[in-house]
Structure formats: C-alpha cells, structure tokens
Amino acid sequence: MPTVKEGRKWSIVGNVRGWNAVYKDATIRYLNSFDPLFEKAKDISEFEFINTLIRVRGLQDAGWDPWENTVKAFDCLTKLEKRIKDFETIRHLFLWLYGHIVEASEPYEIIANLMNIIEGKRFIIRNFPDKQMGKYSKPQTPSEKIEHLTNMAYKIKMPDSIFPFTDVFDRELRNAIFHSDYSLHGGEVRLSRGYGKIYTHEEIQSLINKGSIF
Image (tube, rainbow, N blue to C red; front, side, top):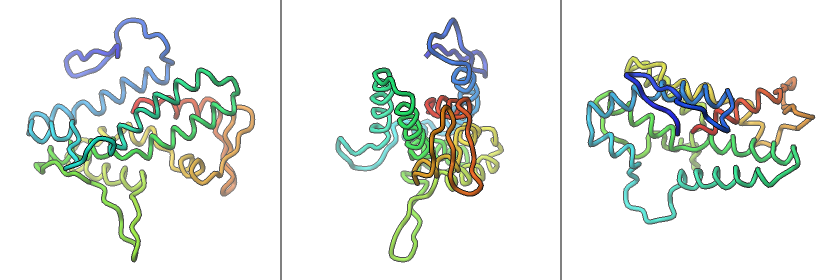
C-alpha cells in the first residue's frame, strides 16, 4: 500500500493508480483514526497486543477462520467483477459483499481488544458473545457492536477511534440487503420498507469503496 507515516500522521505518497477519491480519502482517515489505538495498546502491553494481532482463538486447526474466508471471498469477488459486463449483476454482487464486510466479526473484535488493553485489561477471545433469548441464542448485530465500541472509546478518552465503523456502517442498507428489501432502478438502490429510501449511485459507490478498506 503506497502509504507512509510521518510523525503521528499517515499520508499517501506518489501517484496511486486505480484508487478513486473516496477510497483514497477514507484510507488515510481510517488509518489516522485507528493508529493511536494500536500505538497506545502496544506501549501498554506488547504481549496482549501480539495476541490481538494474531487473533488467538484457542485450539483450532486449519479451516475454521471466518475472517480468512472473508478476505478470500473479497479477493475472489473483486476479480470476478472484472469479467462481468452487466451493471445490475455487479451492483448486486457488491451490495452483498458490503453486507458481508459490515457483518464480519474480526474488525470489531480487534478494536475492542485494543481498547481492553488500553483500559488495563487482557486480551479477550470473544468480546461480543451471543445474546441468550430463552432457549435460543442470537449473534450481536453490527449496531450493537458499534454502540459497545463507542462506549469503550469514550471510556478510554479516544472517541475518534471508532469513526471508521460509524462512517462505513449503514443500518438501513444492511437490513435491506439481508432481508431482500431493496430494488435497483438505473443507478439507484431503493429500499421498500417504510416510506422508501433512495440511495444514489454515488452514495452506494461511496459506501462500497469505504467498506472495501476493511
């Protein structure tokens, strides 16, 4: 990645081919939001910091890492996009990929553990356990995870550190994607619930580009 850190700030060096303005701007903003968390956590406990980076998950053999699967899926689908000529097919593909990205647990877990370390706690394997609902359990939603991270960020006096999550995540769009409650009309994405909401082509492209940074 053609980025460099000078002092306490990240910046882009040289000409970046293939990066649009939204992706370029968001990459730098997200790096500068997350970087203080990584730096501070590392200074407090390198051992717990390393556990966070290698994402310790206890005893498990190969083939049980959802985040590794997400990264591979993203690479496969972006390569597939180059072979597709139909606009609507590409739009469906990347809407579903956007939903996959915002649902992925690992980015939330990593940031939560960095905050744990800064707060003086140890690395935790699962910061967002399933919620018990009678006889059943239900995974926490991205909205619930972001709310938890927001509270943690204010507690450690680093509120800017969760900006990438709030910037990328759109609850209404996520729900529409996974409940099949959206339709395409030209370059627009229209949500059918409530009074109806319309995302322009530019708004959708912006969310997809920013989400791909994760």
